[in-house]
Structures are given as C-alpha cells and as structure tokens.
Image (tube, rainbow over all chains, first blue to last red; front, side, top):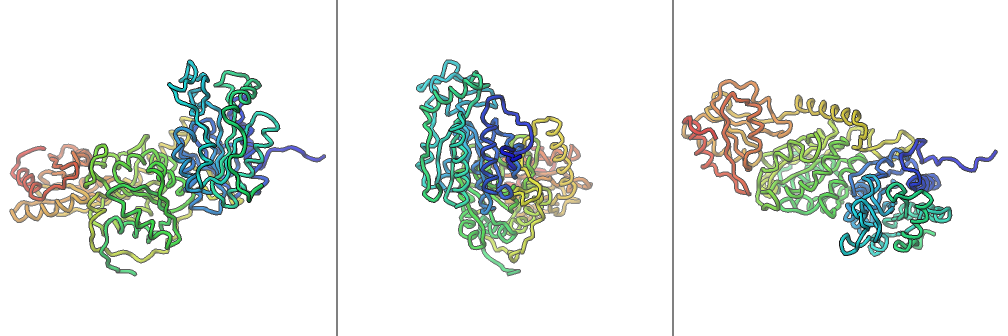
Amino acid sequence: MKQVFKRPQALSDTVMHYCPGCTHGIVHRLVAEAIDELGILDRTIGVASVGCSVLAYEYFECDFQEAAHGRAPAVATGIKRVLPDRVVFTYQGDGDLASIGTAEIIHAATRGEKITVIFINNAIYGMTGGQMAPTTLLGQKTTTTPRGRLAEYHGQPIRICEMIKELDGAAYVTRVASNSPRNIAVAKRAIRKAFQVQLLGLGLSLVEVLSTCPTNWGLTPVESMKWLEEKMMPHYPLGEFKSPGEVK
Amino acid sequence: MLGELLLMKGNEAVAEAAIRAGCRHFFGYPITPQNELPEYMARRLPEVGGVFVQAESEVAAINMVYGAAGAGARVMTSSSSPGISLKQEGISYLAASELPCLIVNMMRGGPGLGGIQPAQSDYFQATKGGGHGDYHLIVFGPESVQEMVDLTPLAFDLADRYRNPAMILGDGILGQMMEPVELSEMLDVQLPPKEWATTGRSGGRRHVVSSLYLDSSELEKLNKRLQDKYLEIMRTEQRWESLDVEGAEVVLVAYGTTARVVKSAMNLAREEGIRVGLIRPITLWPFPTKAFESLEDVGRFLVVEMSSGQMVEDVRLVVNGRWPVSFYGRTGGVVPDPKDILARIRELARGGGTR
C-alpha cells in the first residue's frame, strides 16, 4: 500500500501543548514539510521566541536556540554570521516580533540578514492570557482592552508586512493565512519559497501567517476560522508584498 | 611577532589581543569611552576572515553574541556603563544557557547617563550578577593596558573552560590611555570542542540552546549545577597581587586604574616611614578571598575605589571584623589624587578614623 501522508522528518514525534483550534501546529508542520522537501534538516538552525511558541524547539528535529523576548532576529543574525552556509529561521509571535522586538526585526531586515522569519499574527497575547497585542484589531476585546481597542486610547494595530517591505534588505515579504485548506496550501508554498530565498542569499524573507487563538478570543475553533477571515483579513490583506524574480 | 612592543590605546590593544586569541566575531554598538574598540574591530576583523556587525542597540548586540556563542564561535562585545546596563538581559540568558563569550566594560561615571569620565561604579553590577537570577560572570579588573592584553586570552579560555560569560572591567582611562604594550604573536587557537553548539545536526544528535525550564525541579537542578561551577571557579581562579602586606600598618585594597594611583600614594607614605601594603584583586569575581585568609600582622585596611564604596563590601565580608576597614572613594569621573589617599593613610597610621 502506498503511504500518502506521514509526519515530516523535521517534525518531532511528540505531543504539542497548543490549545485545540490553535493553528501553531499547522504552521509548525508547514515549516517542517518545507525543511524536508528542501533537504536542509541537517543544516538548519531554528530560533524560538517568547510566547506560546516558546517551546517550538521541542517540536522540530533540527538544532534550535531559544531567544529572549523579541530578540530572535538578533540571535539569528549571530548564528548566521558565524555559520553563513547554514539555514537559520526564527519563529515569532505578534507580541515578540511586532511589539518588543520591532527594533530587531526592522534592523535584521535592513541589514538584509539572510534569515527566514515565520511571523505568527493572531492579534492577541496567548501565553500570558489574552492581553492586547500590537496587532489587536480596533474594537477587539482583550484583558487589557476590556471595552475593545480604541484607536485614540490604545493606538492603531500595526501592519508588519507593509512596513518591512519598504526595507531594501528584505527580499521576500508575504502574508498568508492558516484558516482553510486553500490558504494553508498557499502558506506552505510561501514558507518553502522563503527558505529558497535564503538559500539563494537574496536577503531576509518574512512570512506572516494569520492565525487563531480560540482560547483567548473566546470562540470555538470553527468560529475562530470564520473570525480570522471576516475580521482579520480586511485589516491584514493576504498576498505577496515583495518577491524576488529569482524564485517562483 | 613575539615580543613586538607597540604604543597602543587600551581600547585598540584589547581588540588586537582578542583577535590574536582567536576571536573572529564582534557585535557592538557605539558608546564613549570605548569606541576605538569596535572601530578597530571593524577595520581589522575582515582582514583576518572575521565578522564585525554594528548592531542597532546594545540589546541586539548581546543577543547576536548569544546566537554566535551558541553556534560555537569565540565571540565578544564591548560597551560602557549605560550600554552594559542594556546588555544585562542578554548576559543573564548567556549565563543561564552557559554560553562562553567576552564582554568588555570600559566604565564611566553613573548613575543614569552619567558622564564619560572613568569610574568604577559598575562593580556591583559586574560581580554580583547584574541581571535577573542567581549567576556570576568571571570578572577581571586589569590595572594597565599590558595586563588587559594579557588577561584577554585568559578570559576567553576560562569562558570556554567553564562555559560562562567573562568580563573585562576596565574604565575610561584604561580604554583611552596609550601605553607601550607587548602583544603575543597571532595564536593558532584550537577552540575546545563544543559538542553542545547548534551548528546543524550534520547527521548527528540535535542540540538546543535554551534557558527555559518550566519544571521547577529542573530549574533548581540548573541552579545547583551553576552554583557548583561557581564554587569550582572560586576555588581555582582567584587572582591578585599582594605587595608588602605582612607587617603593614595600613593595607590598601584597590583594583584597576585606582590601584595605580594607590601605588603612587604608597610610595609617598613609605617616604614618611609609614609601613603600607597592597592587595590588588585581579579577578573581581571570584573575589580573591585567599589574599586575606592567612594574614596575621596587619594594622588595618583602606579600600580605595572610583565609586561610593562597592568592592569595600567584599573586603569587609572577608575581613569579617578581624581588622578595621576604611574607605576612600571619588565618584562621577573624578580620579583620586595620591595626596588625598596619602592623607587618609597618615590618619589611619596614627590610629584615627574608621571610615
């Protein structure tokens, strides 16, 4: 009998701690599939960040470093500058990348560090219990925006891809979503392409993945998929913001 | 190249010493009075196949050091007091993940933005941990450009041996002044094997560099292992210089630039017939307690620092009430005058004053 589905070699055979309906597990799998397909497991070093994905190093079979909150692009820079022939990627949430680590991601992109950044945007702080993220939508209720996010009081949500694409060192910038089989297939191709951009040494590649947090959104997993599409996508439009001609 | 005598600024000399000790990666951010160090690295590292990165901040620089150290490199950064404060988060992570590296702090006066003149007011921060959690750096307090150059390869070696960050605690004078310095030849450094480094599995076992232990008993295990390591370092790595201590009416204790001023004051005191001695810690952590343990015929101690009194606490701990310990310090970038120190020595030799 032909085996048509199995766990990627780059993904650990372990139980993940993620909540039901959270899409971290899906994105982990997509990253692992891309690593497998490109045959780079033995020369890839991941950098985990602080937040729900802090334990990402438990779920991948490649080497890993766990960085301080927001500092993953700096840690990845250190690794890549020592080992330029290795593949280095960070896996960061919206609190990590878009709030405390904005300086690190902007300057890693500006320097054109040849690293890949997987950026999970679920519009909320998951690990700490549902506080406002820099990407929390206007009107969205969180534990620190109990009456909903107000522009004049809490500030506007930040769009990372639109900002990073302006930086000359960023080679590939795209936003995908993890809410439907079709979008997941697109996300898979984007993640694979991001690694290919790194392998060609073209500059920093960043894939933003719109993701869910049923637990802290207070929705069921199915409602969360719908919320992502109806609420997040209008503010965070999907698509390639910047793409080098070298990689299709 | 052995025996090459050069006239160099301290900042540049320590950079060259690091390169000759095999350092090929430097991550830093500009701050006075240590700028000649990264500038030298920017010029020199590419010539020897190394990499210099000017980071966006001290915070980023120390995390680049973390990544590079985790990847197995001999790596360093440098800064001065306010910048070192910014690095504390990363230093705590480096200590917890047991990553070797060298951090140079050319201290300037604080607190806050302070000034750009030399000071020794980061002693607490350097020797007591500095960031969050129970940890120590291996800290050296050189008194001259030559000693700074000599301690640089040792700092790298001990960092590797103990898998622990090391620090050279200089000051604005040591960084800025030019002195004749003898540099070793370019060493063909064979780094000790770093089986734990994340270099890609290469078919072998995978490696993880992390400081996260969600299980409290596992975190306690890490802490116990760290404390065992620190005890071993305290037992074996204390370094100091003792001068004429036995029989001294006044034993001075000073490190770094201040020790040199103190030596001038001691010469003046000897001319007046006062018996003076000196204990000069070279490792600030581990503090050289052994220099004090076997003392018998000593009058009293006078600790001199460019701070409001930091190392004096370690002296009082080790002296533990056996002798009076007095303190004289200048702050804010003011360097103590030998005549002022002499005045304190005279006063104490006559049996007066306790502080």
